[in-house]
Each structure stands twice: as C-alpha cells, then as structure tokens.
Length: 457
Image (cartoon, rainbow, N blue to C red; front, side, top):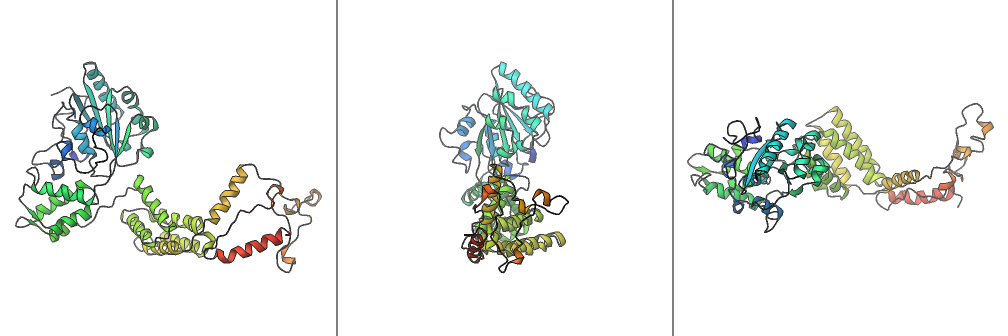
C-alpha cells in the first residue's frame, strides 16, 4: 500500500476505487474502476485521449489541457461544464500522466483537515522529485475557508489542482484561487457525440460487447432524453439492456425503462441564471415560443414559481411599461394565483402572463425615465423644492412661505396650469420619453401637450 493521508473519501458516484483507506494512486494505477461489475458509464470511460468524444476545442495539439493530460503541462485547472461531458474522464486520464501521483477528494465529504493532509503529503513527495495531482470533484461545494486552504499550495505548485464543477467558477470559486487556475469550459455533447458514445458502448468488449441489438429508434430516443449527458445516455442504455428480452433493445423498451428527459438546470447554479436570462430576453425579444419553452424548462426543473412570478412583474414595467399598462396587471394577477393556488395549476397563469408579455408592444421608457432621474440625483441634481409646493399643514408654515401661491389644478378648466414643479436645476428636463409602440403612441402627443402647458411654452 502506498503512503496515505488518513481517511480520504470516495468521489461521488463511486467513480474512484479507493484502495484500503485512501485514494492515493501510483502513476498509471487504475484509479477508476473498470471491472465488469462497475456501471456501464464507468466501464466505458475513455482510457486515453484518442477515445475522448467531444471537447475538441480543448484537446487540440498544444492546448493547455492536452499538455496537462500528456504530462507536460504545469498549470492548475478548473474544468467547468454540465454533467456527463467528460470532467471526471479527464481527471482519470490525468492519473496516468507520467511521473505524477494522484489524489482525489470529494467536496461533498472532505474538509480542511483532509485538504491540508494532502498538501503535506504532496510537499514531502515534492522533495523527492514527485509531483502530485489533486483532483477535487464538485469544488464549488467547498467553503471559502476550504478553498483558501488550497491557495498557497496551488500558487507554489506543491499540488497541481484539477477542480471539477458544474457551476460557473466566477460565482462559486474564490477570486484568488480563480486567478491562479486555468478555467476551461466543457460544452454539452452534441447528438452526434452521444450517438458515437452509444455505438462504442454497444460493440466494445468493455460495454455490451455486441450482445444486444439496439434499434435506431431506441438510440434516437436515448439521444433525446440524454440532453448532452454521456453518463445519462449510458445509464439509460444499460437499464434498457437489462430490461430487454431476446437481446433486442427496442424503442418500447427504452420508453418503459426511462420515462423522463434530463433537464439541464440547477436552481442554485449558473443554469438558474442562464435560463431565467434567456426567459426574460425571449419575452423582451417578443419570441413567445422561446419564452414558453424556458418557462416550461424552469417549471420542469422545480424552479420556485414565486421567483418566476417576480421576474414577470419586474419585466412588465422594465420592458413594456406604458406601451401596455395591462401587462403589469396581468403579471401581478399571475403572482396572486401562484400565491393562492400554487402548483401545478398556477403554471397556467404563469403561461398566460408569459404569453401576454411576450406578445405585448415593448418600451423601455419607464426604465430609462427612472434610471436617468436616479443618475441625476446621484450626480447632485437635487435642488430645493419650490416654496409653494412645500407642505403647509402645520402651524408656522405660512410664515415660512410654504404652500403660498400654489395653483390648484382642479380650479382650472383643463385641470392643468402653468407652474414650476421641479427644482430650479431641473427645469426643462425630460425624463419620460414615450415611444410610438402600443399605448405610448397615444400617450406621446398628450405628454408633449402637457409639458407645453405646465412649462408655459
């Protein structure tokens, strides 16, 4: 048994075979299980770079990741991407890099004590000329204190850190560690990539070894439900093969075995922000179909409907405003349905509000008006309120000149009178600039007329 660091925990999904009480491995050791009892997704893990499917943008000749895997790179990296795209596979290949020892920790179970133990071990190895690769799965789950414990070792290259995360490191990794690492983003596998993964698993001796025939319809269904996740595709294939009769996997077999497609969405991660951003931008861009798609995607993934309702209310004023004043009422009504009725029925109200907002005329005039006014105030344009507009409902107000000479609009025939309302510094400033979209087409002439009367033009 090689020297250990105490009791290090398995990486999630049992992807690491931990010999004895630790996850330390000699260069070239089979750190990842590939025996016949391992899941198909583990058995089919690429044994070398030539077997890696997808991620061509990261594995080109001379690329930092290729040099790292081949043993010539020296930079720590953060592998960021959705599940099933090859992050753990690349870590497996790193374990085979010449001259490097491999340590694996899972952020789900390891603490600062385990991190420091690995670093101490790596420091001793370095004096003997051995470099240590430290792989941390789900590094985004490490606390700030745990991440800070890595800084000195990463900066001084005591360890070569490889962190895997499904969340954007900009949100989940501390800035000092982020600045000391290469951030490499893995892309979801394409449908063709998933087909290639499945084809290899069906024929390869490590996989089904040609013992099953899989119909084209079954393969296409697995591709659809996988959502770009190779692990999910292989798991679906394995489960379907176990349920197949007569060595044939048909569409009906897959449908009976796997009944729900993967939804690439994490309420606590960057997918949460990406999907809600796409939702709002689709509404703003008046693409009602895309907006409904993203709404369904959020609901299917378990997003809090109250969060969606809040975003709709904000959007109704932010991007529609007075072009369709009813949009805010619709969004507010949908929020009330969410509060009073809840799921699953409230999805209809959310869909109605989404469709209303997406098809409504758009205007950013409300946003521009308040934004410009706030900027002026921040810039010091907040002069004294004209005396005749000040409060006069207290003793002594008249002696101070407050509320004296105020012209009460209702006493005038048109209900509007020439009178200065803003501070002197802002006389003549136009904040609200209506568009010619929707209801604002009728508001614009009225706003112009009112300004002329009030300003005495």
